[in-house]
Picture 1: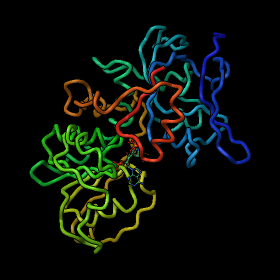
Picture 2 (picture 1 turned 120 degrees about the vertical axis):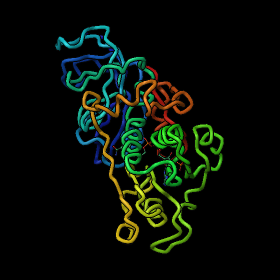
Picture 3 (picture 1 turned 90 degrees about the horizontal axis):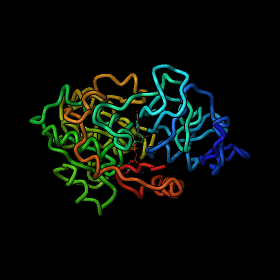
Picture 4 (picture 1 turned 90 degrees about the vertical axis):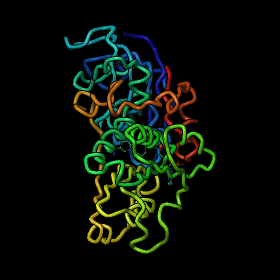
Length: 329
Ligand SMILES: NC(=O)c1ccc[n+]([C@@H]2O[C@H](COP(=O)([O-])OP(=O)(O)OC[C@H]3O[C@@H](n4cnc5c(N)ncnc54)[C@H](OP(=O)(O)O)[C@@H]3O)[C@@H](O)[C@H]2O)c1
């Protein structure tokens, strides 16, 4: 295939990470046995960091960022996939980080990374949910093993973000009293429309600064780390379960041992970077009709043009967007 197409490719120039628009052909892409014509690609926090060159998301240069894509197979050397199949690639630690990823009108990948669409889900929806809804689903599934709606409120931090928006949706549908913590005073209506029972500011998580504060939270879904996570731990109820998967505030956690040894609080780390073919039960539960299907998918996710991607990533890094943007190719 000699068609020319657009991609964003990141280079390392004088120790600086620089993302450039490129005209590419299939031969320019990393090797693989399946070629997909891209339809949609999500914009995660990680992708925004990659495109803008913040942090060390890309580990091999040059590389096309973007960790999730959906589209139509146009070439396949694996008999499990044929031209015309609707598929998605998401999860894992290579696609869009150390091997060419999603921000390209065509992608080429090993067939073992390619997943089929769940029944009743289209190419937009599979990426609109994608890593964000899946990560929240993994965290919520973990939390609800031990914490029941009658145990008390669940706090969700970074509430207007992609993953947290889905966590609010899922917990609310399951009957939990959800408290959304946000830095955006203008998004009260949005958060309530997803199912939040109460909205508070980023500084209102704990009642004070003591190592143990008033017991407020039966559980938490934390997308931000840093001080907000410490605030949650210090103000959690006895035997609370705190599921943490993000670092939007900080990757450093300073806290004390007291919530753990005096209140038996559990801090559960969530790594949901699983490729679609290995997502198992939790991915199944996210099908339409499943207990973890996000009912407000079309309120949370929206499309942007490929040409607007760089500007959108700048905004996202500065906490200036809500929900989950999806590039429509
Ligand atoms: N462990 C895993 O497997 C996994 C998988 C996916 C994502 N993640 C991580 O989860 C986090 C959320 O990802 P996402 O794609 O949902 O990102 P996102 O859409 O950018 O959401 C992050 C939210 O965090 C809040 N925030 C931003 N900067 C902050 C700051 N300095 N202090 C406190 N809060 C801040 C903002 O919400 P408000 O303005 O409403 O406060 C923002 O919308 C990221 O850290 C990402 O790397 C981890």
